Image 1: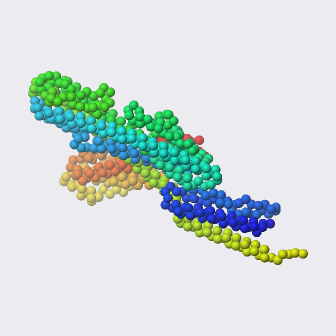
Image 2 (image 1 turned 90 degrees about the vertical axis):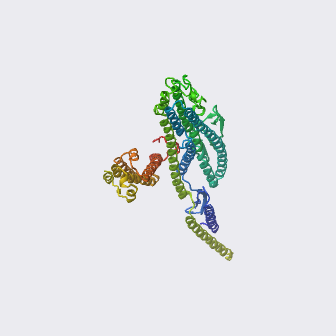
Amino acid sequence: MSSLNASLATALSGLEAEQGSIAATTNNVANVNTPGYSREEPVLVTSDPVVLTPLTFGTGVTLQSVESIRDPLLESQIQQQTQAQGQFSTLTSALQQTQVNFTASTSDIGTAISNFFDSINQLSTNPSDLSLRQGVLTAAGNLATSFNSTANNLTQQRSSLDLSVVQAVNQVNQLTQQIAQLNGQISNLQNLGESAGTFVDQRTQAIDQLSALVDVSVIPSDKSLTLTTTNGSPLVVGQQSFQLQTQSNLSGLHDIYSQGADITSQITSGQLGGTLQARDQQIPAVQTQLDSLASGLATAVNTVQAGGFDLNGVAGTNLFNPSPVSGVGAAASLSVAITDPSLIAASSDGSVGSNGNAEQLYALNSQPVVSGHTPTNYYSSIVFNVGNDVANASAEQSASALVLQQLNDQRSSVSGVSLDEEAADLVRYQDAYAASAQVVIAINDMMNATIAMPTLTG
Amino acid sequence: MAAASTRQSGLRVQFNDPDLKRMMPADSITTAARELLPGRLVLMRELEASLAGSRKALLALDLEDIERGTRDQVGLIRALETTGTSAEASSLRGLPPSMAEELRRCEAGVLQEARLQAALLARAQRKLRILANMLADPSLSYEFLFSKPGAQAHIL
């Protein structure tokens, strides 16, 4: 038969368990506004019973653990969308800066092309007029300057994005170090059988921050966590972090290395992915198109020039300095080759009054001289492509933001603290504590009564 | 013509919007424009609103609402086709600046909403694929399925 002491121990286990539960509720209430905090719930289990044949007596309750409430599927989705949002917000911002170069203005390339052909058209009305010839040279100079400044702006933008790459890699390294340390703390606590909820919350927040920077795969194990990039390069394995390194390549931009391997092209998500996409794909594509336009236009103009005669009746020379053979850097290096307006080959037969070649120069405006397109149409397609890329990146960013908002709301409903629920739990635990205390008082009375009983001797 | 098509798709489109008529004085525009443009503008506005309305369904993965929205949008696009192309509408002679501006705004709005819709659809598709895999085998690790937009689900 159970003794009064055993009953007292059972009542005390109830007091301890309810105290622990109240502590968990108190911590929940205290963290109601803490970002990233996951609600804690006490896990109560029945203590092992004592068997005194033929009877079995319960021995009370044990507070087995205090568990943080999380949904791993939700966490994974949030990390995925955080990566996408980081990628597209960076890409949108970079492309918007690129787009500024193509906004219609008095000095944009489109206007400069138009002004250049207008000046040739005017020259064809009076080919011997030196002021009109000077007008063509000025317009050609403005056109070259437009190409130069746009190309230089794009190169500068790539350099500044390159700086962002180095900064982002440093941030990634700081975070992976922090996560490795948290892995250690979590593992130590779990080995002692204690709750590591607070550290797990901190780790989840750090992983969220890391996800905004780079594409991360999270591989949970028993008491730890492994993080890799999506292509499998290790970032954190247990308590060890693996640093990413940056190294300048031949073009002066930084590549990213993991364990000695170049993983630059494999990073596709997060801020780092968006920055690399803009630096290595989108902006170079625009630069290549600009180079094609500059090279095609300069070559076509020079070819027509060579077929005509200048004001002195001499065969025409190049109006623009020839573009590099490869075409690379043509926009940045475009320049006017002549300073003497009389050298413009407006005449088709060597006579002073002839405007045949000026008309041929003007006709280039409507001829497919750049990859099968007229100069104006080719430029328009560059502007369209940049605008389209901005709109697509912006839509992707909005979609990620909407989904992320929804997922965060869901996480709040699963892991967030509801003050109403905590209030109800507090009353429940308080009542149970009071009841257990009442049992202790009753047993104490019974013990006192037992002690006060007269001794039955002889 | 446009009104008939939209009625078939179950949509109620009011082409007699007094604001639209005010924007388009009868003596300053061709007959073709007078007939086509109000309908085109109304349909554009409807399409923009329908695409915006589909967002909620896509986020909630409400398949019924997604299908309903898609049906409405297909109907509106068919009706729009009867009002000519965007280029034709913009090139109509005598188009009042306010109406041209409104048309451009609506077209830009539809494009933006359509892009957003495509991005949300891609995300919804990925999520559904993951859920289908989880239902097929609850023990399957879904971690890698989140990785990339083009990643294929592995059904065991």
